[in-house]
Length: 378
Image (cartoon, rainbow, N blue to C red):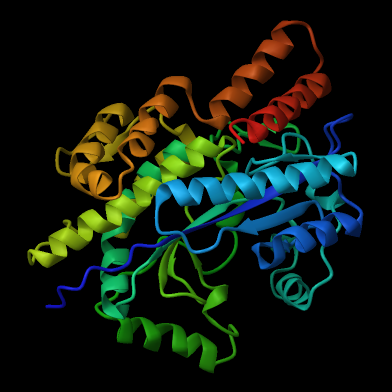
């Protein structure tokens, strides 16, 4: 057995929406100078996304959660400042409360052209944003082994991140409607279980050799071996509106992977459950967020989310201490107490309607809330 501990470095990517603060509408045709100025200030840490109203940032490789927070806070601040200079604002939410996907302008880029050609309307509907967390694991087989095991915890992370309750001006009844849109694409969802990195390579290699995909970047599982880096990449979660919530999710994912690595070192592993069962918890997280609990497969009953979260904290306590991020993972208790972004958006919307505002004005006030919360803590 390889006793070498993986580096467990961390990198975070976030996708934001540009909005007109006067109307709350998406900036479907923002000036090119916004991206140009951001690129001048941030270099490769910023890039365009599928829609022109979107912009993506990615931190450098960080060795600590504190470093990742400082880096991501600086990126959010820069994007917000440049947008403000152009009369726009930034929101970190996985869906816009009232925008129509059919009204958006697409970024002119060959990769996106091919995506639309292949996926047609499914791709054109992708008015959604996410966040991705990369954790450095330099052993190929270990990366696959940990991917197999951490899948169990993905619903726990999704529930804590939800920020997309609205779609095209409607309350969807889901805390993460982004997941419903995203899952229409092929090669999404929970990853298969692989016995080795070699088996993974053979499986995806068949798709590449037959011309179905160009490379593994077009495999969009909820967690996957990165196509570019020796990392395991979390893709399950919504983007968190508040910066401190993003950092909490990143710290939790990092600590979970180290906890599973410790089991691996002792010739143990997390009990495997059929993907069908884990997918049921994904649905519960997508539909209810933290409100209605998840299934504890061992106890064969639904357990309140707050109880499950305390169990997770116990599992990763040693790892949180190792990474000096106890307060960051325990911030999950604060999220549970005050609600995720989805909860706050819905509460604000209901309060606005209760105050006599019409539907459009109430939704616009949700955008105002998202602008304020996206900039908080920077």
